[in-house]
Amino acid sequence: MLYEMLTGRLPFQASTDVGMLRAQVQDTPVPPSQLGVQLPAQIERTLLTALSKDPNQRFPDTTAFAAQFREAVRSTGIPLTVNPGAAAPKQKPK
Image (cartoon, rainbow, N blue to C red; front, side, top):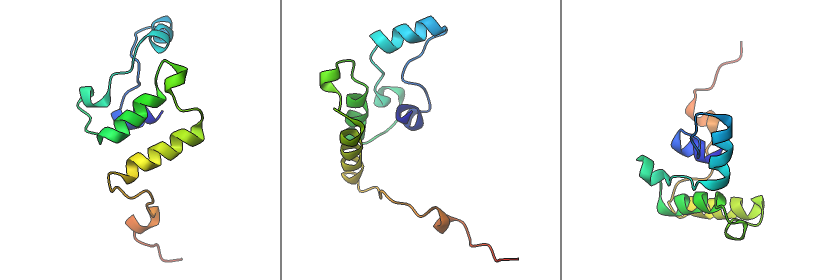
């Protein structure tokens, strides 16, 4: 899901369900940079590590992935927290 959120497409493309299953098992996801998506290199590496075909190359668990993704984002200087209410003006009570 994160790959789709960052690239606007699924990591694997196929015209049939069987083709999609085959792609998930056999194909390597296209790096976002090859799709024209400009991500900081550390974020792209973290994302592709999570999608590695070799279980020994992936993160051992979601906690490790989340920690590495947070560190990748921090390395860019992008704030990790956003106050969603700050963007919208406060509504006056009726």
